[in-house]
Amino acid sequence: MAAKPYRPVVLLFAVIFLVAVHVRAVGQASNPSLPRVHRHIGVDKSATGTDIPEFAMTEVSLEASTKKESLITNRARTHDAFTVERTRLFIAERSTGRVFEIRGLQLEWRPFSELTWANDHTLMFDRWSQPHYGVHYSVEVKEKRLTAAVPFPDKFFLAQQKPKSKSKSLR
Image (tube, rainbow, N blue to C red; front, side, top):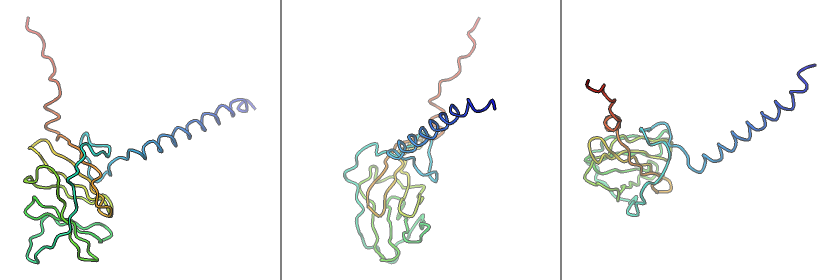
């Protein structure tokens, strides 16, 4: 058969391909992508852009009459996340009734937006510093730690930054 001399070459290329795919997957594990549930242009890798030592999840007590805004529950129904007066962010453990407030993030007078559970223990949200520029946050609720604080622009801002096409020169 004429195909036999090519069999070792094909097997060699298949092994090289599989090794390359494995190496790429292992390399990505150290710098994981953000979950697809909360993507922004230019924010594709999980990174703590700036160390925020003031970040804390502090246990608090809320009055029963407190108005909860933007209430979301994770899929496992173990935690609720909500805002109060748009500028304070809380996470409640449903089994224990304990409530934690996220504190120490910059621009405390700015509202939180886009609260989303990426999975049962990771809360993602944004805080806009100006109309076209914000900071994307990710918090690991079980470990009570900030896992991402990444600034990002919106589509309008990016469109304004593109170079304008050169018009034809005048004669």
